[in-house]
Image 1 (cartoon, rainbow, N blue to C red):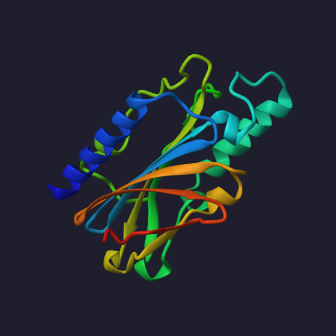
Image 2 (image 1 turned 90 degrees about the vertical axis):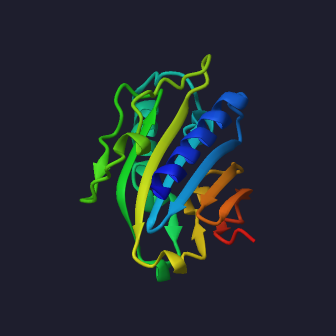
Image 3 (image 1 turned 180 degrees about the vertical axis):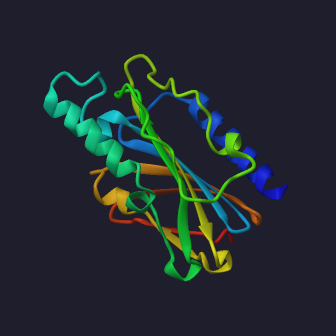
Amino acid sequence: MRRLAIAMALSTSVGLAQAAGPHVHGQGNLDLAMAGGTLLVELSLPAADVVGFEHAPRDDDQKALVKDALARLGKGTNVLEPAPAAACKVTRESVHSGLSDSETEEHDHGEESPDHDADHDHDHDHDHGGHADFEARYRWHCDHPEKLEWIDVPLLEFLNGVTLKVQLVTDQGARADSLKAPRTRLSMDLR
């Protein structure tokens, strides 16, 4: 029940963040919710910061850039690296962009979620007046969540100059933060 409440809080905060303001170049959103051994993550990035444009791909080179970005963002370990002591493994990953006709297939790694719809909605219409985004969702299972003291965000090393606005929700509370390379480590401490 608590996990569902945190997932709902994350969904609400993401919806509010998206409704609260326009898409901002150079800034993405990273929302994390931790309940028990489950870590839910949502990432939203302006397409211009990922591939350098926000229009439908016009040639094979641009199509390749979108395909490569979907592949990179479609793998949770390219985005986040939880502290090894927590023994976290990706159990679900998906990514979508308004620049692509298709969403990468959602990869479920064997852990079925009774609240699948809380983890993944099917409304991906996020092309706001020519401002396309890349949006990704991940679910991790951590065998030792009490040892999840930090999470590295290696994705920032590939996104030159992008700031991630972070919202973190756990059983202990909530916190806002921001990350920008070279600072790529997010503390999970809510004190």
